[in-house]
Length: 212
Image (cartoon, rainbow, N blue to C red; front, top):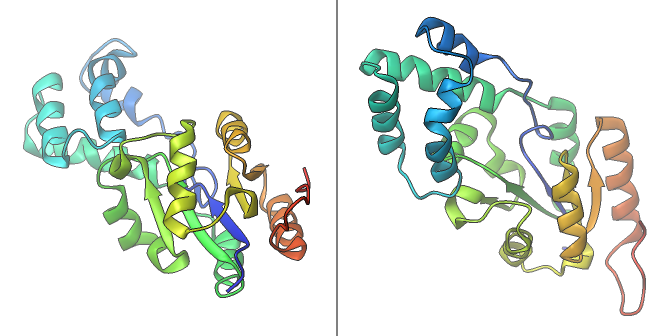
């Protein structure tokens, strides 16, 4: 198989994830000032994103900090996951599925504890790509350069042969600093065109400068 590689983000790229307003809805429901839930849970969200807290502990903290009973916690977490998971970007997913066998494929995602199980069940990303690197499993979030290094290492590929696709400019800039080729996701058409150009160019040879 070619050492040419494509690594994609999930939220905002493979998943369409508009804001649902679920936090504000809970603040209204609990008669709390706007912003209270985010402030109360900020460190828990951070811990969940780097895997320093378990799903069970997240549920316990939600209950303790917001004064929710067990059914309310379940509803709260269901709302969290509904926004987090969004809906699948079917056009891009179908295109990437068609690339299997022609290049190396991976995912690098800033995530939350439980994401692998949810996304495997709903979207089967484990069947779409060879390797998925989640921040909550490696304890490192983008734009830390070590996250990009971990993604390349998981596929045993050189950064310069990888096209990294993300919808966050800071992450794209960090991937460039890590030596990867990059594309800022804005829509499917331009992203598919950029991937096709990357694959047509093939793996880098020593001394060749990658396209911008």
